[in-house]
Image (tube, rainbow, N blue to C red; front, side):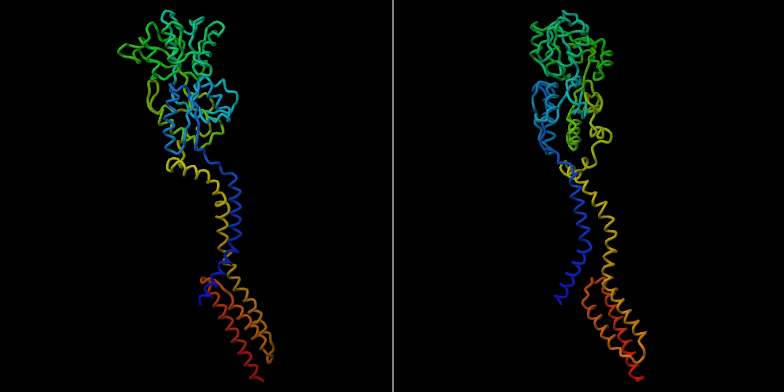
Length: 443
């Protein structure tokens, strides 16, 4: 009987294919269409523009590289001259830079509207050291002096020129020296510079050097409130007496500082899956308390140079995505990308599979019930046939019907209906034979 079983399975498979085949084909088409809207996979290689190798940006980038490396992302750290160059590199996709540290106050050098901020990271105070003999109490006292403001392309030079210009001090009336870091401190000590500008965190080694220089003092911005009103990216900070060195009582008095904030900046086409990853790294690196920052104050959606990206806004409002919280990065991004593929399942499979089972049942039962129409014809002919007429043609029709019904293959779940049909055929045959016997007896 193995051949019979194989034939039954073959018939059921073909019948299932007739019913479910169009549904599967339609679903496949839906998947193909939906796949056109699947976001590309996030890159596994990023390049970040930083600053000088002895600067905070570069050192922070090395920590980012370590953290992202654990998630399968290679971060290339590029040394640059500073924020202005970083913006230029970021604006030109051909340079291969994906993300950059940008100092507040340098955004005016951007030539396009394609840059967005992911977060501000920490305060970067502006430190202005002057030779004590100048007795300079504000920027206005720097006119005509030799100012070490950093090289072209640096954030220090950009903010120095901005504030100097606001006080009417321009390059024509003042000597701007392209010195930065240790070179600027040495020039100040040697007397070849009168003033040195630094934008650096309080932990920067150059500040420890500069604050100890003989005959050098740290300027206090007594009009700090005015500057913060005119330039919203600036924040007024108070450096308490003795904070930098308690033993030497440095600075010797409370000092008002102006501080832009370091920003993490990308192009507006930056892959959204990487936003959570970068902000998670930023939280780990910059989330602690500092001399001027409260714990968990940074990264922040405030103090931005460029407008906040929509993905970063979502991150600050609700935190990391559900998938990012509970899945490895590769799995979270895969599920996030493929969720659009659920659309065919929801819009096609769910309603269709509610319709398909009844359709399948109807097709199977139709294989059986259509023979009842032929039985009804025989039954009607038997009832209308005059007495004494030959009924052998009705018996032949019933034999034909039974022979064809025997060839019907149905699933076991419908075998009852199949055998009921054969019982009814046999019953009708007995009725015809009874009528035929009565007719012969009457004759």
